Length: 182
Image 1 (spheres, rainbow, N blue to C red):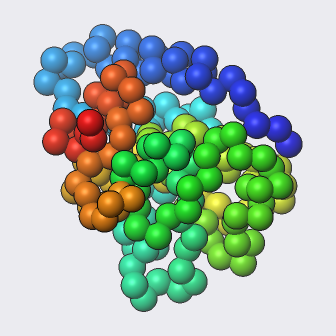
Image 2: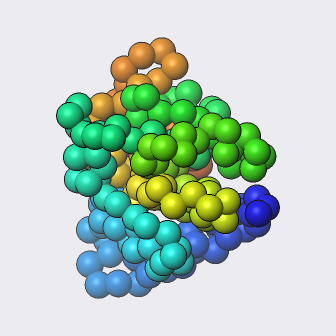
Image 3: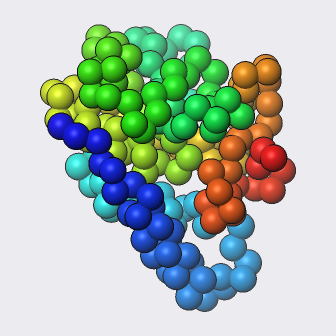
């Protein structure tokens, strides 16, 4: 089980594929961050068809106060992204976390929801967990961008926030402008 170090290159290819598909389709000029994100979600689900995926409505139900067992929420983004905005109660497990530290951070007895910006890095982390025998992890399709675009509550290191880190200019376009942190 090794960390996929090809992430930046693969992410660039994924971005180009989704951008081409989005902007070559009829009505592309009227795309919103939310509809553009749908194309990304579909691409991630196709690339990671071996990974279980859930969308925002299912995540909301899993995080409801009376949900049992309560899931563990893992944020698979870099620390600066996590600091800008994350789901309440999430634990930051950056992409370069060693396998032993990754397994130590995850409670094997609880269901796990893993998210990143759009669902790509979190799907890679779930594959790592699967390779270690963990079967209770689910990828949040659309991840924090979908959560933020829907206006759900977020936390930052300074308290409540309404924005998240846009990763970069290319990926930030999948966030509604008012949801992009500086």
